[in-house]
Amino acid sequence: MSAPAHALLLDRGGLRRRRRFNRLVEAAATAAALLAVAVLLIVVGSVLVKGAGALSLHFLTTPMALFGEPGGGISNAIAGSAIMVALAAAMAIPVGLLVAIYTTEFAPRRFGHAVGFALDVLNGVPTIVTGIFVFGLLVAGRQQSGFAASVALAIVMLPIVARTGQEVLALVPGTLKEAAHALGIARWRTTLRVTVPTAAGGLITGALLAVARVAGETAPLILLSSIFGQGVLTDPRQALASIPIFIFRSSEAPSPEAHTQAWAAALVLIAVVLVLNVIARVLYARSRSKMGAR
Amino acid sequence: MQSGESREILAAVGREIGNVELRGLDAWYGDNQAVKGVDLTFSSNRVTAIIGPSGCGKSTMVRCINRMHEEIAGARAGGQVLLDGIDLYDPAVDVVAVRRAVGMVFQKPNPFPTMSVFDNVVSGLRLSGAPRGEMEDRGREALVGAGLWDEVKDRLGRPGASLSGGQQQRLCIARALAVEPEVLLMDEPCSALDPVATLRIEELIGELKKRVTIAIVTHNMQQAARVADTTAFMLSGELVEVAPTEKVFTNPDDERTEQYVSGKFG
Image (cartoon, rainbow over all chains, first blue to last red; front, side, top):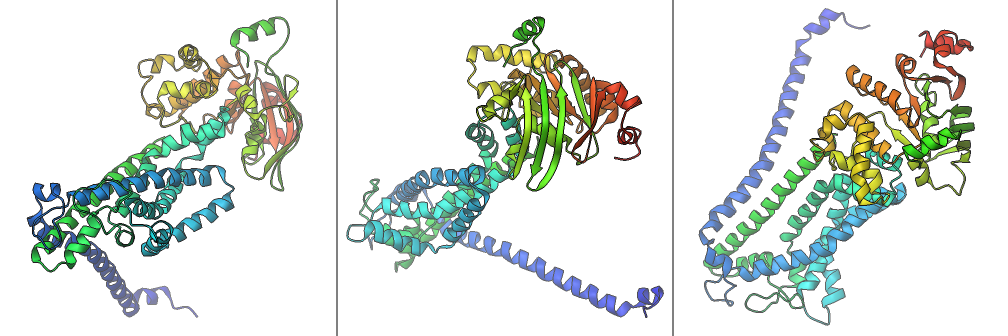
């Protein structure tokens, strides 16, 4: 027998308990969200506080000092990082975009899903494993090189570029492809002239995020490009300096000055990654509004 | 492809251009048959409206005419679609040639968002390798033909998506006209438009039938009565009745047609 309606309305005890529980869960969720933001603020804040002092034009434009000597800067690390990331981008971005275009526009659906899964697995491979793989391939029996490091970075970038590419291309409205087909435009032309330009902002976003992701990658670099010569080196057949390796080394060094330099280099790295992320966000928002505002 | 001029010449010697004849047309989505043995002729320089309740197969039927139906995975068609006597499903016929001869306008205006007004109009031409010099003239001609020239002549370089909904739809009509098709399929072209924009398109259809054969799918029976010379009524994939529009709406032969046009179902 069900209770009469007014009895349900007056059953204050159960309701109060539920409301209290609701408030509790809400508070916990809010606290968790605040914690995540707080972690970011603490990391950025401490890097800023500890590194800003050592940051100067001199620091950015001078190569590393010899081991154990004071002074020096990160110009060679900036150059090396830029070269290795650029090489990696040149390898990974075209391949990643082609993978995305092929799997979303041309491949049978099941094959597309299979490739997507493979990319997810590749994305989950620890970068030290990628580093060891490339070490066995390009470095063992020879010597470390900036090129070997950029191959490892390219392997890290590839699934990010391809996966975001797949997602953005899938957002392009089917009605546009339909319109192109109905005009008798061949499929590959539709892809090049209609689908890819419509998704361009999102595709660039994916590429930028991948660059930001590998700019701070350290594990493969330790194996592949960490024993380098003095001064600003630019030949990727030799091992090149990099910002992550500089941070790693300086923080291991005994002198407090080296520690401050490590913080300063970390600040440079964070700033670069932050800027890339912001640009990527803006481009993505723009590209989405373009697709929505048909 | 026939230019307007050669069309007139051929018409003068008694040869009609743009006659579409369906013979026993069947269409399936997997095992589900959406169109069942339809025999229907779309005559040159006339507007044929296809009416019927949702899911009766009218859109599927017109999509078989430009072979867009086969773009859907698992979809296939049987029977014959003849354009001036040539079977469009003949293995020797290239699907791209079919799409050039039979243009299409969709429910929702779908200009290419990355292209300007003008680039939208000539997109079909450009991608078929028409000479660059011709582009400007043919683009303008198509915009004039779609009744859009006066409104957009000062902003041809603006994005196509910056136009109003009705203008976008006329832009899509201009884009279809630019490749000079013989037949124009319109799949509920006004269903996303307000009444004023709808009126503009209906007036335009009256003009366009001098140049192309028009097949228009519509949910709106008043629209069919206003624009069509011939009206075909479909139900559950079958063609129930086809007759001059006035007869379909006033004195149909089939009882089901009568019930539908008088609003008893659908």
